Length: 448
Image (cartoon, rainbow, N blue to C red; front, side, top):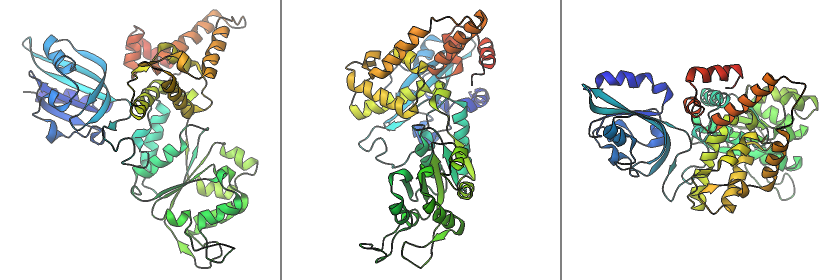
């Protein structure tokens, strides 16, 4: 009966993470997901079961499917927290449409997108069952970041070295770990070392190991290269490494072997090198912080992480992600941020990037006693930054035309609403404009 509707669902698979068809009673007749690794549900387990048996936290009144079967009216872009029967929490954006034949409801089509991190409700929650970040930990709606995630998938199975550039707090180690866990080295060692944290006199022995008797107190000890054999070695703040050590690192990468400090026996290893810097590579080379020949070896592939101020559309998804994270860790029931908090966040420059956003929300959790984080719960410096902006917003720039100032304001509104929405369709709906007009505005203001 439902075969002809499956083609309609297939057309939208590119835009959603899961889709299903139910009959008029809510029994699932067809199911598909692109992210079984997130929701833990597969076709064999789902088909034939009632929708209320799949998700334990919904009932006939809160289920969008049961609501559509009862009323015949579609439900569009409904944010939902769904808990599967296996205890997996899904933050979903769901649309449910009725299937009509001869003016009679015979079922529903239901599609969902997952817009933030998923956690398993168990004692081993939140990375106790895994030590490293994966690609799904990169929470984003930004076109640049989506492109970055696609690049990570492409390079994860190669042995080529990778250089990551990003300002402090953008998540360079998150990207490095995602490269490791997305590819063939997953399950092998991932070793990370911040090069600025170790004096040059010790860094060589930490990287390459030591031989007993090579200096007072020295023992036979493996270095990071040996420990990372078969896996990945991540060198953060590579621009802080002393030049004397850089020469030995270059030799080890070129020859795929090295000797321990004080040793004479060469040791061969198979290691993928990922490095990171918060300084533009050309600037590091110009001031002599990185040897140019080493740079070529380390940056076969270059990845740039855009700062948060250039992808403000991610404020909303990241905020929801951190709310869920701190709800679990602090045993709280915070549901959202106050509108004025989103106003502040969307107008702030975020010099500390995602790390600073996370810290601000965590601070709000510590101060707030309610279910909504308010402006007064945030760090004082953030609130003061909003007050300064409010003092300036009414200052008229007589060197600019009215149209230029109105365009700036319109662009600001669109960026703000996009950051608080899960999709462009939802943002257009909030602004009470058509999809065509909204897309025209996005193109006009060069908003991704």
